Image (cartoon, rainbow, N blue to C red; front, side):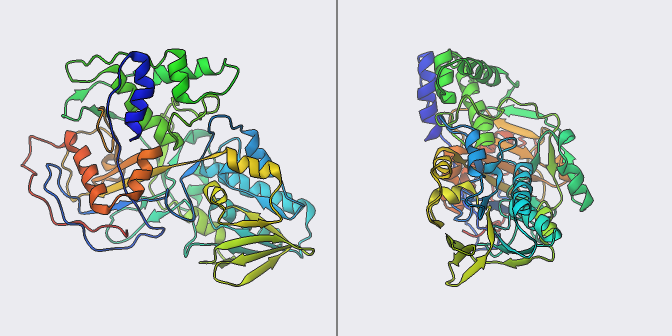
Length: 486
């Protein structure tokens, strides 16, 4: 129970510990209908349809994106992308020290790896690219356009990797199950790239709607952001790297009041809610594991954010158009030979190439599902071991009519026992009553492992504070929604 442990660690500085909990839920690599889930009576109506993600348990992802654990260094991302004997090259967001964990970081890494090959290889050579995500697609397109023979080997039966768009008749608008946000969009070339292929990235107006589990409106508070800012500034002056949780305790920034106000909310609750909805979600890591020296930017401004409302997946499929792709061909062995590189595939056959670019996610590298012969250099193995794979999951609900009356676009439930404390109301952006709940770190893993019915029930219970009590009663369950594949 992540929040309970967190309250103990941080609340101890304030002389208190508070109990809380987070939720659960899974999703298949490609969405598909499955048997329905029996509705449970709740004050929140059953959705017309819902979709979950399970990147945490997906064997081809093993997580959402990389992060810097305590004691790791950004330089290890650079070490990981160094070519091995001029034959094996690595790409992926985890190898980019400028924008790790992002689509643009993955793009940059793919181009970088392709350029490295082009510097040393003649165009009569064959290059195998392992992984048909954005890093692999970028590398493959660059090399193919330069005249190389390229084959893309993909373990899934689809392309896109951690960019996955749900686009079927059950949903009135495309829904992004993986990457969806473009941060700092004014300085991000992705906006123009998407526009060039008719994919819209719309400005997102963050209108906070904070409420207690009982439904009382709560004014947005800077308590959490201020505490984390103070803790990170203090940690930057320390002789060794500490976790964000240790920095909160050691700096005294986490020593906030546990006295509850008239709405039943304390500053300690506000701090823990900020950690769950910003630090956990943005980094994919628990504050007890996240480096305080390199935590990303948990207090960053969201004023320049955009949300992809078109089909993000087209960014990958467009780059791969016309290229040779082997789907459903997971690589189990990468072996260097006198003449190049040999790949053994899970289906039993082998593939030879002069060079190979490995773009599988860090989580897959950490799982040892791919064997390298000979073993990778120590610098590569050390980097794979040191870097962390963050967890993030979504619960997406579609309604025919909204059951809420607020115009707020970002809903935060400020409480100590909330399964899904963060929701995005997509009504203003898409014109459709769609809600997206997001979880990070340990709470995300619980979502990925939970059953459909348990995950949905936890999500609906969390949304009770936003039910419009001035309208008709909603205690009678709606028709059973379509559920995602388990």
